[in-house]
Image 1 (cartoon, rainbow over the protein chains, first blue to last red):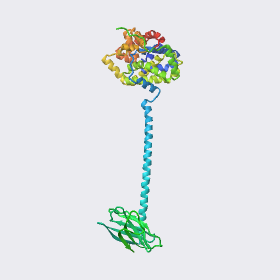
Image 2 (cartoon, chains in turn green, blue; image 1 turned 180 degrees about the horizontal axis):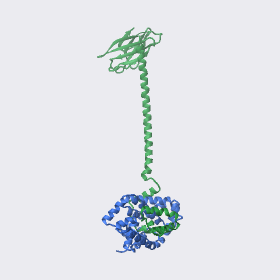
Image 3 (cartoon, rainbow over the protein chains, first blue to last red; image 1 turned 180 degrees about the vertical axis):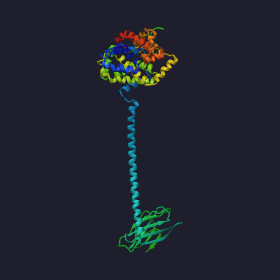
Image 4 (cartoon, chains in turn yellow, blue; image 1 turned 90 degrees about the vertical axis):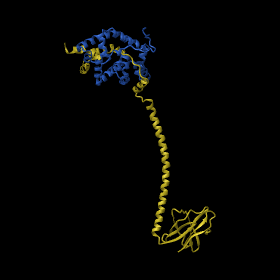
Length: 241
Length: 203
Protein backbone atom coordinates (compact mmCIF):
# COMPACT_ATOMS: atom_id res chain seq x y z
CA UNK A 1 0.00 0.00 0.00
CA UNK A 2 1.57 3.24 -1.06
CA UNK A 3 1.00 6.50 0.83
CA UNK A 4 -1.52 7.78 -1.73
CA UNK A 5 -3.83 4.79 -1.17
CA UNK A 6 -4.82 6.26 2.21
CA UNK A 7 -6.12 9.34 0.42
CA UNK A 8 -7.96 7.24 -2.15
CA UNK A 9 -9.62 5.15 0.57
CA UNK A 10 -10.66 8.15 2.59
CA UNK A 11 -12.02 10.45 -0.12
CA UNK A 12 -15.65 9.68 0.73
CA UNK A 13 -14.96 9.89 4.44
CA UNK A 14 -13.34 13.29 3.86
CA UNK A 15 -16.41 14.48 1.97
CA UNK A 16 -18.64 13.13 4.74
CA UNK A 17 -16.27 14.77 7.26
CA UNK A 18 -15.98 11.53 9.15
CA UNK A 19 -12.18 11.79 9.44
CA UNK A 20 -10.62 12.79 12.73
CA UNK A 21 -9.56 16.45 12.84
CA UNK A 22 -5.86 15.73 12.34
CA UNK A 23 -6.65 13.32 9.47
CA UNK A 24 -8.92 15.90 7.91
CA UNK A 25 -6.16 18.50 8.14
CA UNK A 26 -3.71 16.11 6.49
CA UNK A 27 -6.19 15.38 3.70
CA UNK A 28 -6.96 19.08 3.19
CA UNK A 29 -3.26 19.90 2.90
CA UNK A 30 -2.90 17.13 0.32
CA UNK A 31 -5.66 18.37 -1.98
CA UNK A 32 -3.88 21.37 -3.58
CA UNK A 33 -1.01 19.05 -4.49
CA UNK A 34 -3.10 16.24 -6.01
CA UNK A 35 -5.27 16.93 -9.03
CA UNK A 36 -6.74 13.44 -8.98
CA UNK A 37 -7.92 13.68 -5.38
CA UNK A 38 -9.18 17.22 -5.95
CA UNK A 39 -11.19 16.08 -8.94
CA UNK A 40 -12.57 13.00 -7.18
CA UNK A 41 -13.50 14.94 -4.06
CA UNK A 42 -15.35 17.51 -6.18
CA UNK A 43 -17.19 14.73 -7.95
CA UNK A 44 -18.14 13.05 -4.66
CA UNK A 45 -19.35 16.35 -3.28
CA UNK A 46 -21.60 16.80 -6.28
CA UNK A 47 -22.88 13.22 -6.20
CA UNK A 48 -23.61 13.26 -2.50
CA UNK A 49 -24.74 16.89 -2.56
CA UNK A 50 -28.43 16.08 -2.29
CA UNK A 51 -27.95 13.70 0.63
CA UNK A 52 -28.55 16.55 3.06
CA UNK A 53 -32.12 16.71 1.81
CA UNK A 54 -32.67 13.53 3.82
CA UNK A 55 -32.78 15.58 7.00
CA UNK A 56 -36.23 16.38 8.27
CA UNK A 57 -37.06 19.98 7.37
CA UNK A 58 -37.61 22.34 10.26
CA UNK A 59 -40.22 25.05 9.97
CA UNK A 60 -38.60 28.42 10.57
CA UNK A 61 -39.72 30.33 13.62
CA UNK A 62 -41.89 33.35 12.85
CA UNK A 63 -39.86 36.20 11.44
CA UNK A 64 -36.73 34.11 10.87
CA UNK A 65 -36.65 34.42 7.09
CA UNK A 66 -37.07 38.18 7.37
CA UNK A 67 -34.27 38.33 9.95
CA UNK A 68 -32.06 36.17 7.78
CA UNK A 69 -32.62 38.40 4.78
CA UNK A 70 -31.84 41.50 6.80
CA UNK A 71 -28.75 39.91 8.33
CA UNK A 72 -27.39 38.63 5.03
CA UNK A 73 -27.94 41.99 3.39
CA UNK A 74 -26.48 43.56 6.52
CA UNK A 75 -29.61 45.59 6.88
CA UNK A 76 -30.50 46.91 10.29
CA UNK A 77 -33.84 45.79 11.67
CA UNK A 78 -36.83 48.08 11.44
CA UNK A 79 -36.32 49.49 14.92
CA UNK A 80 -32.64 49.94 14.12
CA UNK A 81 -33.62 51.94 11.05
CA UNK A 82 -36.26 53.97 12.85
CA UNK A 83 -34.38 54.44 16.09
CA UNK A 84 -31.62 56.70 14.74
CA UNK A 85 -34.23 58.94 13.10
CA UNK A 86 -36.27 59.03 16.27
CA UNK A 87 -33.17 59.76 18.31
CA UNK A 88 -32.07 62.43 15.84
CA UNK A 89 -35.51 64.05 15.93
CA UNK A 90 -35.57 63.85 19.70
CA UNK A 91 -32.08 65.29 19.87
CA UNK A 92 -33.10 68.08 17.51
CA UNK A 93 -36.19 68.87 19.56
CA UNK A 94 -34.13 68.72 22.70
CA UNK A 95 -31.50 70.97 21.19
CA UNK A 96 -34.14 73.44 20.00
CA UNK A 97 -35.85 73.30 23.38
CA UNK A 98 -32.62 73.64 25.25
CA UNK A 99 -31.52 76.36 22.86
CA UNK A 100 -34.75 78.27 23.39
CA UNK A 101 -34.60 77.64 27.11
CA UNK A 102 -30.93 78.53 27.12
CA UNK A 103 -31.60 81.69 25.18
CA UNK A 104 -34.34 82.64 27.60
CA UNK A 105 -32.18 81.75 30.57
CA UNK A 106 -29.28 83.65 29.09
CA UNK A 107 -31.37 86.78 28.61
CA UNK A 108 -32.75 86.49 32.15
CA UNK A 109 -29.26 85.98 33.53
CA UNK A 110 -27.93 88.92 31.55
CA UNK A 111 -30.71 91.12 32.87
CA UNK A 112 -30.11 89.88 36.41
CA UNK A 113 -26.39 90.38 36.00
CA UNK A 114 -26.85 93.91 34.65
CA UNK A 115 -29.13 94.69 37.57
CA UNK A 116 -26.61 93.26 40.00
CA UNK A 117 -23.80 95.20 38.40
CA UNK A 118 -25.89 98.34 38.50
CA UNK A 119 -26.71 97.67 42.13
CA UNK A 120 -23.07 96.96 42.90
CA UNK A 121 -21.97 100.20 41.26
CA UNK A 122 -24.60 102.08 43.21
CA UNK A 123 -23.47 100.49 46.45
CA UNK A 124 -19.85 101.22 45.62
CA UNK A 125 -20.83 104.83 44.89
CA UNK A 126 -22.81 105.03 48.14
CA UNK A 127 -19.90 103.53 50.04
CA UNK A 128 -17.53 106.09 48.56
CA UNK A 129 -19.82 108.92 49.69
CA UNK A 130 -20.16 107.40 53.17
CA UNK A 131 -16.40 106.95 53.37
CA UNK A 132 -15.56 110.46 52.11
CA UNK A 133 -18.35 112.39 53.92
CA UNK A 134 -17.11 115.36 55.85
CA UNK A 135 -20.36 115.86 57.79
CA UNK A 136 -23.28 113.76 58.97
CA UNK A 137 -26.65 115.19 59.93
CA UNK A 138 -29.41 113.27 61.64
CA UNK A 139 -33.08 114.02 62.36
CA UNK A 140 -35.89 112.02 63.97
CA UNK A 141 -39.06 111.36 62.01
CA UNK A 142 -42.54 110.47 63.23
CA UNK A 143 -45.20 109.15 60.95
CA UNK A 144 -48.38 107.84 62.54
CA UNK A 145 -47.20 105.35 65.11
CA UNK A 146 -43.82 104.83 63.38
CA UNK A 147 -40.63 106.39 64.64
CA UNK A 148 -37.78 106.65 62.22
CA UNK A 149 -35.01 108.94 61.15
CA UNK A 150 -33.25 110.82 58.40
CA UNK A 151 -29.44 110.62 58.15
CA UNK A 152 -27.49 112.70 55.61
CA UNK A 153 -23.83 112.02 54.80
CA UNK A 154 -22.43 115.07 52.98
CA UNK A 155 -19.42 114.96 50.70
CA UNK A 156 -18.52 118.51 49.76
CA UNK A 157 -15.73 117.39 47.43
CA UNK A 158 -17.92 115.36 45.09
CA UNK A 159 -20.99 117.50 45.87
CA UNK A 160 -23.00 114.41 46.61
CA UNK A 161 -24.97 113.22 49.56
CA UNK A 162 -25.92 109.87 50.85
CA UNK A 163 -29.42 110.10 52.28
CA UNK A 164 -30.73 107.35 54.55
CA UNK A 165 -34.38 107.21 55.60
CA UNK A 166 -35.35 104.51 58.06
CA UNK A 167 -38.33 103.48 60.16
CA UNK A 168 -41.00 104.96 57.91
CA UNK A 169 -44.02 103.01 56.71
CA UNK A 170 -44.85 103.01 53.00
CA UNK A 171 -46.22 106.35 51.85
CA UNK A 172 -50.00 106.81 52.26
CA UNK A 173 -52.09 105.94 49.22
CA UNK A 174 -51.83 108.56 46.49
CA UNK A 175 -48.76 110.15 48.10
CA UNK A 176 -44.98 109.85 48.00
CA UNK A 177 -42.17 110.79 50.34
CA UNK A 178 -40.22 113.62 48.76
CA UNK A 179 -36.70 114.75 49.71
CA UNK A 180 -35.87 118.48 49.22
CA UNK A 181 -32.76 120.61 49.19
CA UNK A 182 -33.13 123.92 51.01
CA UNK A 183 -31.06 126.45 49.10
CA UNK A 184 -30.46 130.16 49.27
CA UNK A 185 -32.89 130.60 46.39
CA UNK A 186 -35.62 128.31 47.66
CA UNK A 187 -36.60 124.63 47.85
CA UNK A 188 -35.21 122.31 45.14
CA UNK A 189 -36.95 118.99 44.50
CA UNK A 190 -34.60 115.99 44.82
CA UNK A 191 -35.56 112.27 44.90
CA UNK A 192 -38.63 110.37 45.95
CA UNK A 193 -38.01 108.10 48.90
CA UNK A 194 -39.26 104.57 48.62
CA UNK A 195 -39.70 103.95 52.32
CA UNK A 196 -40.20 100.60 53.96
CA UNK A 197 -40.32 100.14 57.70
CA UNK A 198 -38.27 96.96 57.55
CA UNK A 199 -35.40 98.20 55.37
CA UNK A 200 -33.78 101.64 55.27
CA UNK A 201 -33.95 103.55 52.00
CA UNK A 202 -30.45 104.57 50.95
CA UNK A 203 -29.98 107.10 48.16
CA UNK A 204 -26.98 108.87 46.71
CA UNK A 205 -28.00 112.22 45.32
CA UNK A 206 -26.18 114.98 43.52
CA UNK A 207 -26.37 118.47 45.00
CA UNK A 208 -27.87 121.36 43.07
CA UNK A 209 -25.49 123.63 41.20
CA UNK A 210 -23.24 126.13 42.92
CA UNK A 211 -25.59 128.95 41.84
CA UNK A 212 -27.92 127.83 44.64
CA UNK A 213 -25.89 127.00 47.75
CA UNK A 214 -27.51 124.36 49.95
CA UNK A 215 -28.39 125.30 53.48
CA UNK A 216 -30.47 122.39 54.60
CA UNK A 217 -32.81 119.56 53.63
CA UNK A 218 -36.41 118.51 54.19
CA UNK A 219 -38.59 115.43 53.85
CA UNK A 220 -42.28 115.87 53.10
CA UNK A 221 -45.31 113.86 52.06
CA UNK A 222 -46.49 115.01 48.63
CA UNK A 223 -49.32 114.05 46.28
CA UNK A 224 -48.20 111.48 43.73
CA UNK A 225 -49.77 113.53 40.93
CA UNK A 226 -49.95 117.25 40.20
CA UNK A 227 -46.68 117.79 41.92
CA UNK A 228 -45.53 121.29 42.73
CA UNK A 229 -42.06 122.81 42.64
CA UNK A 230 -42.58 123.81 46.23
CA UNK A 231 -43.50 121.49 49.14
CA UNK A 232 -47.29 121.32 49.61
CA UNK A 233 -47.75 118.41 52.00
CA UNK A 234 -46.92 117.42 55.51
CA UNK A 235 -43.34 118.02 56.56
CA UNK A 236 -41.66 115.06 58.29
CA UNK A 237 -38.13 116.38 58.71
CA UNK A 238 -36.36 119.70 58.33
CA UNK A 239 -32.67 120.17 58.95
CA UNK A 240 -30.41 123.22 58.48
CA UNK A 241 -26.62 123.15 58.30
CA UNK B 1 -51.88 5.55 5.23
CA UNK B 2 -51.98 6.98 1.75
CA UNK B 3 -48.75 8.44 0.50
CA UNK B 4 -48.89 12.24 0.46
CA UNK B 5 -49.20 13.91 -2.86
CA UNK B 6 -45.65 14.92 -3.75
CA UNK B 7 -46.76 17.72 -6.01
CA UNK B 8 -45.27 20.90 -4.57
CA UNK B 9 -47.43 23.97 -4.28
CA UNK B 10 -44.48 26.13 -5.31
CA UNK B 11 -42.64 24.07 -7.91
CA UNK B 12 -38.97 24.82 -8.23
CA UNK B 13 -38.30 24.23 -11.85
CA UNK B 14 -35.03 24.07 -13.71
CA UNK B 15 -35.98 27.33 -15.36
CA UNK B 16 -36.64 28.91 -12.00
CA UNK B 17 -33.34 27.63 -10.63
CA UNK B 18 -31.47 28.99 -13.66
CA UNK B 19 -33.26 32.30 -13.29
CA UNK B 20 -32.50 32.38 -9.58
CA UNK B 21 -28.82 31.68 -10.18
CA UNK B 22 -28.56 34.45 -12.73
CA UNK B 23 -30.36 36.91 -10.48
CA UNK B 24 -28.24 35.96 -7.48
CA UNK B 25 -25.10 36.39 -9.55
CA UNK B 26 -26.44 39.83 -10.45
CA UNK B 27 -26.94 40.57 -6.74
CA UNK B 28 -30.73 40.67 -7.02
CA UNK B 29 -31.95 40.97 -3.43
CA UNK B 30 -35.41 39.65 -4.27
CA UNK B 31 -33.74 36.49 -5.54
CA UNK B 32 -32.05 36.13 -2.18
CA UNK B 33 -35.41 36.49 -0.44
CA UNK B 34 -36.83 33.72 -2.63
CA UNK B 35 -33.84 31.48 -1.96
CA UNK B 36 -34.08 32.00 1.80
CA UNK B 37 -37.79 31.28 1.73
CA UNK B 38 -37.21 28.11 -0.23
CA UNK B 39 -34.11 26.69 1.43
CA UNK B 40 -34.35 27.68 5.09
CA UNK B 41 -36.44 24.70 6.31
CA UNK B 42 -34.02 22.22 4.73
CA UNK B 43 -30.90 23.96 5.96
CA UNK B 44 -32.38 24.27 9.44
CA UNK B 45 -33.10 20.55 9.35
CA UNK B 46 -29.45 19.79 8.61
CA UNK B 47 -28.04 22.22 11.15
CA UNK B 48 -30.42 21.38 13.95
CA UNK B 49 -29.97 17.66 13.45
CA UNK B 50 -26.29 18.11 14.17
CA UNK B 51 -26.28 20.86 16.75
CA UNK B 52 -29.47 20.02 18.64
CA UNK B 53 -29.77 23.72 19.34
CA UNK B 54 -32.32 25.87 17.59
CA UNK B 55 -30.53 29.18 18.10
CA UNK B 56 -27.20 27.82 16.96
CA UNK B 57 -28.82 26.16 13.97
CA UNK B 58 -30.31 29.48 12.91
CA UNK B 59 -26.90 31.13 13.26
CA UNK B 60 -25.36 28.47 11.05
CA UNK B 61 -28.05 28.93 8.42
CA UNK B 62 -27.47 32.66 8.50
CA UNK B 63 -23.75 32.09 8.03
CA UNK B 64 -24.47 29.79 5.12
CA UNK B 65 -26.69 32.30 3.37
CA UNK B 66 -24.20 35.09 4.04
CA UNK B 67 -21.38 33.00 2.62
CA UNK B 68 -23.49 32.10 -0.39
CA UNK B 69 -24.53 35.71 -0.98
CA UNK B 70 -20.94 36.84 -0.76
CA UNK B 71 -19.85 34.29 -3.33
CA UNK B 72 -22.66 34.58 -5.83
CA UNK B 73 -20.15 35.67 -8.43
CA UNK B 74 -19.15 32.03 -8.82
CA UNK B 75 -22.71 30.88 -9.39
CA UNK B 76 -22.77 31.66 -13.04
CA UNK B 77 -19.78 29.40 -13.64
CA UNK B 78 -20.55 26.55 -11.28
CA UNK B 79 -22.47 23.54 -12.45
CA UNK B 80 -23.50 22.49 -8.97
CA UNK B 81 -27.14 23.08 -8.15
CA UNK B 82 -28.00 25.70 -5.58
CA UNK B 83 -29.43 23.44 -2.91
CA UNK B 84 -26.53 20.97 -2.69
CA UNK B 85 -24.21 23.94 -2.56
CA UNK B 86 -26.13 25.48 0.35
CA UNK B 87 -26.54 22.12 2.09
CA UNK B 88 -22.81 21.56 1.95
CA UNK B 89 -21.99 25.00 3.31
CA UNK B 90 -24.50 24.55 6.12
CA UNK B 91 -23.32 21.10 7.00
CA UNK B 92 -19.67 22.16 7.05
CA UNK B 93 -20.43 25.14 9.25
CA UNK B 94 -22.45 23.00 11.63
CA UNK B 95 -19.68 20.41 11.88
CA UNK B 96 -17.11 23.13 12.48
CA UNK B 97 -19.18 24.35 15.40
CA UNK B 98 -19.82 20.86 16.65
CA UNK B 99 -16.14 20.11 16.80
CA UNK B 100 -15.27 23.37 18.47
CA UNK B 101 -17.49 22.83 21.41
CA UNK B 102 -17.09 20.37 24.18
CA UNK B 103 -20.82 19.83 24.20
CA UNK B 104 -20.45 17.67 21.17
CA UNK B 105 -18.69 15.13 23.28
CA UNK B 106 -21.28 15.45 26.01
CA UNK B 107 -24.03 15.00 23.46
CA UNK B 108 -22.32 11.88 22.20
CA UNK B 109 -22.04 10.58 25.75
CA UNK B 110 -25.72 11.23 26.31
CA UNK B 111 -26.62 9.43 23.13
CA UNK B 112 -24.49 6.49 24.22
CA UNK B 113 -25.97 6.44 27.69
CA UNK B 114 -29.55 6.56 26.52
CA UNK B 115 -29.03 4.31 23.55
CA UNK B 116 -31.09 6.81 21.60
CA UNK B 117 -29.45 6.83 18.25
CA UNK B 118 -30.46 9.79 16.15
CA UNK B 119 -33.01 8.17 13.92
CA UNK B 120 -35.20 11.19 14.61
CA UNK B 121 -33.18 13.27 12.18
CA UNK B 122 -34.74 11.25 9.44
CA UNK B 123 -38.09 10.84 11.11
CA UNK B 124 -41.15 11.13 8.91
CA UNK B 125 -42.94 14.40 9.14
CA UNK B 126 -46.53 15.48 8.84
CA UNK B 127 -48.24 14.82 5.52
CA UNK B 128 -48.77 18.54 5.01
CA UNK B 129 -45.00 18.85 4.63
CA UNK B 130 -45.48 17.15 1.27
CA UNK B 131 -46.47 20.52 -0.09
CA UNK B 132 -43.05 21.89 0.74
CA UNK B 133 -40.83 22.49 -2.28
CA UNK B 134 -38.19 19.77 -2.41
CA UNK B 135 -40.29 17.22 -0.60
CA UNK B 136 -40.05 14.73 -3.44
CA UNK B 137 -36.24 15.00 -3.27
CA UNK B 138 -36.46 14.34 0.46
CA UNK B 139 -38.49 11.23 -0.23
CA UNK B 140 -36.06 10.05 -2.87
CA UNK B 141 -33.13 10.44 -0.48
CA UNK B 142 -35.06 8.46 2.09
CA UNK B 143 -35.73 5.73 -0.41
CA UNK B 144 -31.99 5.58 -1.15
CA UNK B 145 -31.20 5.44 2.56
CA UNK B 146 -33.86 2.82 3.15
CA UNK B 147 -32.26 0.61 0.52
CA UNK B 148 -29.04 0.43 2.57
CA UNK B 149 -28.43 -2.38 5.05
CA UNK B 150 -29.39 -1.12 8.52
CA UNK B 151 -25.81 -1.02 9.85
CA UNK B 152 -24.65 1.03 6.83
CA UNK B 153 -27.65 3.35 7.13
CA UNK B 154 -26.78 3.82 10.78
CA UNK B 155 -23.20 4.73 9.91
CA UNK B 156 -24.42 7.31 7.38
CA UNK B 157 -26.89 8.63 9.86
CA UNK B 158 -24.25 9.20 12.50
CA UNK B 159 -21.57 10.51 10.15
CA UNK B 160 -23.53 12.56 7.69
CA UNK B 161 -26.54 13.74 9.66
CA UNK B 162 -24.97 13.92 13.12
CA UNK B 163 -21.45 14.95 12.16
CA UNK B 164 -19.63 12.21 14.08
CA UNK B 165 -16.18 11.04 13.10
CA UNK B 166 -15.15 7.43 12.55
CA UNK B 167 -13.79 7.21 16.07
CA UNK B 168 -16.92 8.73 17.60
CA UNK B 169 -19.16 6.35 15.70
CA UNK B 170 -17.01 3.43 16.80
CA UNK B 171 -17.34 4.49 20.42
CA UNK B 172 -21.06 5.08 20.07
CA UNK B 173 -21.75 1.73 18.47
CA UNK B 174 -18.96 -0.06 20.38
CA UNK B 175 -17.54 -1.59 17.24
CA UNK B 176 -14.04 -1.46 15.74
CA UNK B 177 -13.18 1.69 13.86
CA UNK B 178 -12.21 -0.35 10.80
CA UNK B 179 -15.75 -1.68 10.69
CA UNK B 180 -17.13 1.82 10.83
CA UNK B 181 -14.89 2.92 7.98
CA UNK B 182 -15.93 -0.01 5.85
CA UNK B 183 -19.64 0.44 6.52
CA UNK B 184 -19.50 4.14 5.79
CA UNK B 185 -17.46 3.72 2.61
CA UNK B 186 -19.79 1.07 1.27
CA UNK B 187 -22.84 3.12 2.17
CA UNK B 188 -21.54 6.25 0.51
CA UNK B 189 -20.61 4.31 -2.62
CA UNK B 190 -24.18 3.00 -2.86
CA UNK B 191 -25.66 6.41 -2.17
CA UNK B 192 -23.56 7.98 -4.92
CA UNK B 193 -25.18 5.64 -7.39
CA UNK B 194 -28.65 5.92 -5.90
CA UNK B 195 -28.60 9.69 -5.79
CA UNK B 196 -27.04 10.17 -9.19
CA UNK B 197 -30.41 10.81 -10.88
CA UNK B 198 -31.02 13.65 -8.46
CA UNK B 199 -28.55 15.78 -10.31
CA UNK B 200 -31.29 16.14 -12.90
CA UNK B 201 -33.95 16.67 -10.29
CA UNK B 202 -35.33 19.97 -9.31
CA UNK B 203 -36.86 21.21 -6.11
